[in-house]
Length: 322
Image 1 (cartoon, rainbow, N blue to C red):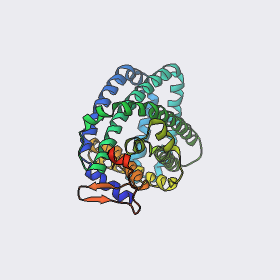
Image 2 (image 1 turned 120 degrees about the vertical axis):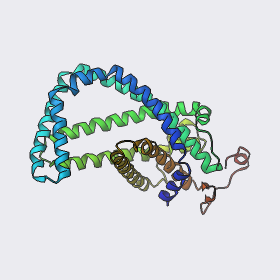
Image 3 (image 1 turned 90 degrees about the vertical axis):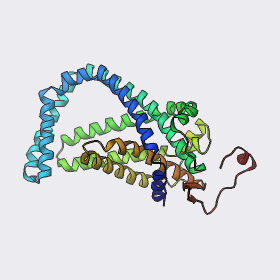
Image 4 (image 1 turned 135 degrees about the horizontal axis):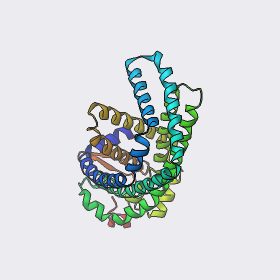
């Protein structure tokens, strides 16, 4: 039921995808320009033009082409060459440890600042969707950004560092996992499967524990501290059910982005990438509304009402909390 309602809410708010896309593109262009000026020269001159990196990319290309052509017998030899090339790239990175560390720190700083600005857009998008679900009204996206700038800035000041620490921890763990798999006797395809499986689970786990944060701020009208405690409190929240839903959503999002990315030579990603974030926000709000037994609009002709609808107090009614 949550999936069906999420898709319905998403389709009713699809027009916001293009505004969300424009906002993200502006941030991407600015962050990309800074990265290009500060990091690209080192990556281009020292890494991308190196024989070790060229050998690795050529090996990966050969493996993919033979896999697509069904030449299974040659995959073992190519896999061994890929592992050898990967070892060469690792040794190359060790020789540029200082420059690599400084570049990574600069990149991390740019990512954190960009994520902070992106999070403000996510907050505004969720607020617009919430207005549509609650009041069946189309709130202007950019005006909503300005209106909620203070709350969104404070929320992202807390969320982005926590998310970055989690993502970096997972990334470091996955890096060592790849290193272990390359030097183990596991078949290459088994290693790829394990890598994808752990990545999907790690993303779904983060989404599960932060799922209630934005809805608690926007719809629940909670303060920053209260919403932070609320999202990590798992009492009566059916954590495993929410986790399972997020696993399916993440898999569908990956499949949609890969399919549209390859079939449209990347053009489809202009729609599927922002739409991926929006459908996750829709699920967060639907999950919150359903659990809190709040009524909401799927569209102007359909309203979802719980079997036991919460009754507003006199104070909530006059504050306009529908």
